[in-house]
Structures are given as structure tokens and as C-alpha cells.
Amino acid sequence: MIDLEDFKNWDLENSAVTLWFFKRPAKDAQGLPKFRGNWLDIDDDVERVLKDAAILTRDRIDEVNAYGLLAQAQEGSVLEISADETNIGLLTTQMAAELATKQITDVKGVLNSLAYAAKFVVGGQAIFAFKRLDSSWSTKKSKKLIPAAFVDDTLTLAPENTFQLEKNFDFFAIQDDVLVCQKPGFETVLFYKAAHTEDFGLLVGEPDFTNIFDDVAPLVNFVGENKLNLRRASAIRQKRHYADQQFMDNLRARHIEFRLTINFDGNGKIIPCEATCRDIFSALLDHRLKSGFSNNIYAVPDVSPA
Image (cartoon, rainbow, N blue to C red; front, side):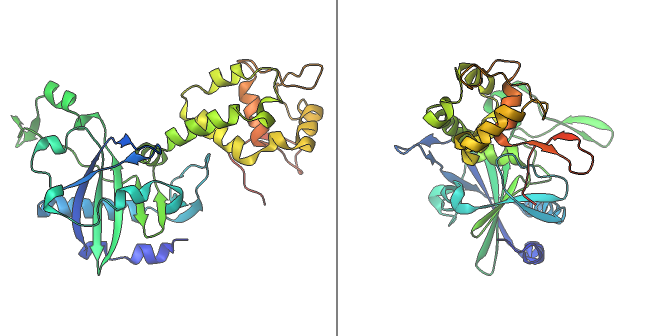
């Protein structure tokens, strides 16, 4: 687990900085992304703003919480996940050394990149900070726009191949850990949505899951390509409440008490439809809570045992 105080004391100010770019990768025979990183020479001004962005992102962190499929990085917090649970090693390995064969010498090496990563090195130790790139870095966008700048009360043409660097980073890689500041950027760069999609395919092929329904097709339609629903499905598979007979018996007996709209057939199987899929997911996630003090029922986005 990362020591937040050590991270905040790490001397980013006096680190050596290199900037790497990654295009959207193909996949190997095992389905893993084949990342290829290339580095770009930067001047002192760019080095300065990259350090400022990393320091600003780091200084906003007040607490570190465990990464979860449904957990969100709230203001002042980040989510921590072990590096070996992600594809991060496939990127940091590419960034081990600034070889001449990996240097970008043409703007084509930057255009259409998936992300850039700043590598900060002090005393032989490296911290990596990643940022997902938007469409302004695409060839299509650059061909449609004329770069301009406001200088001395006048709009003037800016140099061609002008790009904008963000003032923050989406996530850090620090030795054996990843600190996630912006979950969408993290999931896009490390292909977590693809993992959730695969997970959902395994879930709907699992007899313990499909046997609690009369038909899973409405659930498949409900999930679709929605990133949040795919994460929820992965969490359902991880928790496996559907395979717990006592849990399912309690759900059948008490779903009305907990204000869940779920229909069952005569054999106790769930009958999903468009109107009930959301409540079905809430139930299988065990995300309905009852206060022991007020007796109020609460729908919650995530839970942690007390």
C-alpha cells in the first residue's frame, strides 16, 4: 500500500522529466494490448508545466481508498489498486529507457495518440503520471481547425501542430501501486472497459447466474455497452450473491419491504424487463440498506462492511 506522506514528499520539483506517447494498441494472441511507447524531446517550459500538473494533482490528494468496481474518486481522494491487477506494467516497461529508436521526430508520432505519460526520475526511482488525450490530438481534428492565439489584444495565427497539455493527470504509477485520480481516464488507457465486457460475457454464461432468471436477454439489453452497467455486472460476478441460496431466499421474501420492483414466476425465478433491471442489479449488488435508527430504506452506489 502506498504511503501518502512519502508520495507527497517525493521531490518532483527536482526530477528529470521525459514525455512519452502511446497510440491505441492492437491485441496479442492472449488478448492483451500490445502497447508501444515513444518519447518526445521537450523544452524547459514544457518540463515546468508537466511538473506543475503532477504537483497540483498530487497536492489535491487527502486520502487513499481501495479501488473498487463501483468506487469513485471523490474530491480530495484517489483510488489505489495493485499494479499487477492492471496492464500498467505493459506501459511502464516501454518507458524503461529513452532509446534513439523510440524517439519521436515527426508530428505523426504524436497525432492520434491514446495518452501521454510523464516520467519523473529522482535518484534512480521513477514515478509515472498518465493522461488520456481527447480528440484535439487527432489528425482529423487538426486538419479541420486553424490554430490561432490571442496576443497583445490581437488574434493572430498560432504555429501549426499546436497542442494543449492538461493541468492535471488521470493516474499515477508508483512502484507496485496505481493511484487513480480520474477513473474514466484510467479505464480507457488501461482497457478496463474491455475487461468488464469480457467479465459480463462470463457472467451470462454461468449457470449459477442464469438459473435465477426465466430469461437473461432483457439484462443483456439493459447492460449493452454502458460502462457503469458493465462495472456493476463485474461487481455482481465478484460478489456472487446469486449463488447464495439463503441470499436469494431472502430476496424473494423481502424485496417489497426494501422497495425493490422485482417480479418472480411460480418457480421463484426472476422475470427481468426493462422497467425492473435496475432494481435487480441493486439487489444482486446488495445495495439496499435499512437504517437501524430511522428505519429508512436507502439506495446506495457502493458499500463497505462496518
